[in-house]
Image 1: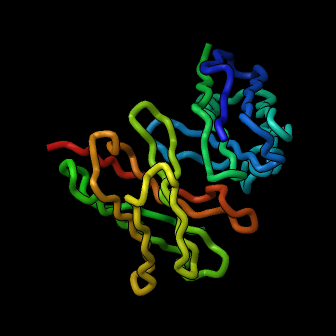
Image 2 (image 1 turned 45 degrees about the vertical axis):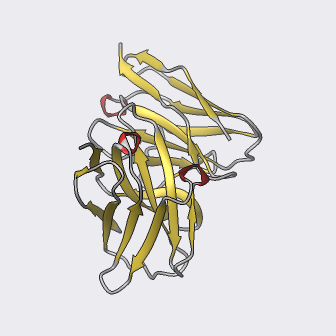
Length: 105
Length: 121
């Protein structure tokens, strides 16, 4: 299963809303996760099963979607949210999308 | 909170075997229901899942790696190991060990810091 993420880069200002997309090449139900990665760090699990926040993840992060189309929304960007975001599916093997970089405008 | 730490050589020669160890603290590799994973990240930033070992010792590997990886448990040292045979420059990457999310297997909840392995002569 191939995951496609868009856009590749999202340039926004702190306080703005970020909307990231992940599309699967075939239906994966709700078996999708989102990760955040900052330079020099390992990825951090944010969302699993499309919409469940992992422990300690702020409420400004939310995930929606099912089937082939998924969205990660950051309601109001904080300075620490500028990073690369990856989606990952677990329906057929475990594959990651290519990432969306959220950078400061 | 479980913590993981990778260790191993940073440089491996082409055609040799890459060997890495993940040391687990704050939990046991024998804990019921847990999957222990190896994941790598290429210099271009793409992520690839390599395989996992279940707490029972059962394994599952990414078919794209064509029988090259082996993952082992060492319960006496609370570690799990990755061996990847016949490496080439294409295996140059940061290698992460990771534990799955309790209650929602095969999402990666805890990660090591990663170790860069370069394949070069």
